[in-house]
Amino acid sequence: MTSRERMTLLLKKQIPDQMGLYEHFWPETLRDYWPQQGYPKDADPQKHFDYDIWGCGGWFDSSPFVRPEELLEETDEWKVTRNGRGARLKHWKNKSGTPQHIGFEVTTPEIWKQYREPLLATDRARLGNLEDLKKNLANARAAGKFAILGNLFVFELLRATIGDETFLPALLEEPDWIRDFCQVHLDFYKRHYEIVFREAGTPDGFFLYEDFGFCNGLFCSPQTLKELIFPYEKALVEFFHDYGLPVILHSCGDVRKAVPQIIEAGFDCLQPMEAKAGCDVLAFAKTYGNKLAYMGNINVVPLGTNDPALVKQEVVPKLNALRKLRIPYVFHSDHSVPPEISFATYKYALQLLREHGSY
Image 1 (cartoon, helix red, strand yellow):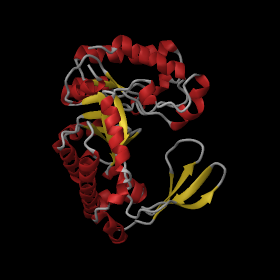
Image 2 (cartoon, one colour; image 1 turned 135 degrees about the vertical axis):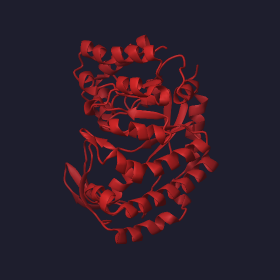
Image 3 (cartoon, rainbow, N blue to C red; image 1 turned 30 degrees about the horizontal axis):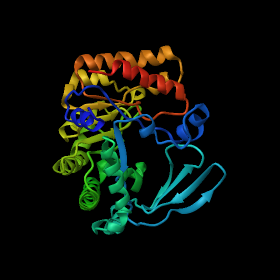
Image 4 (cartoon, rainbow, N blue to C red; image 1 turned 90 degrees about the vertical axis):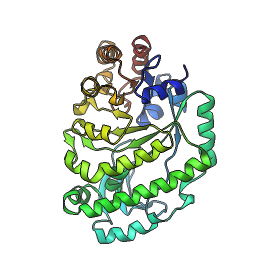
């Protein structure tokens, strides 16, 4: 069975020959740490580890104003920039991390009206070189891999454009603004992905990145999500489904209370199910069965000890239980592989998958 065939079955919530395999990494893991431990420098992990999924691109500039980032401040350790969303953000220069929110120009519905106008137009130039994307899709298909595209959507775009301090209160105080923001971006995405699919071809699936939760729960109530956010999630999922594309939802944090809505919206797979935030793939599997496929939940904390006994204790019971329950599952960390996990430890975790990941 090819990777493409395997992932197609898994995302249909069916059981193939074995569990799937995919991963995300913190950039410094592959760039700064693992090459000193035997990982080939500049190697592509999806090829090196023979992942079932190959990311082929699909990201494009959804900023209201397409322009280079403006550098406002800089030190040896960080820099402050202003982007086409009018957001001023502070980034570490030499390590990964969530940017610090310094300030946002879009703070009222009136200011938003100025920023929404460019998003009402279709601008093919935002999409970049679609010939490269077309080649990526062809290469994945030739290798028998499941080709996937990805992008952020409205919850993350609200955070990126308005900022948490305005966006979260606006969910309660300015719901019409939130609805307009979401509708504008939904229409914008549909118009531009129609061009992508027409000119570059369709992938095998789509990865939608939306962080609904943090370590202690959701950023807003399930009811607020249901009323203001998930109608647009469902509409975009239906758009991709019309092209025959299953949709994987990435949502960090504790999303336990949102899972019923995730299923209702039509998402095909939930990733990464952060163990550190209380998510448990076995609890999800026992509660929701194969209404979803599942990707992730391998806790990076025990893996980061680099103790083989603790790694085995984390990995093997989950794989055995998921296999026994006949749950469609893709092996993945509960977020991304940090540099604390050694190259040898990660290879050992993959060995455990090979030993215990057949259905």
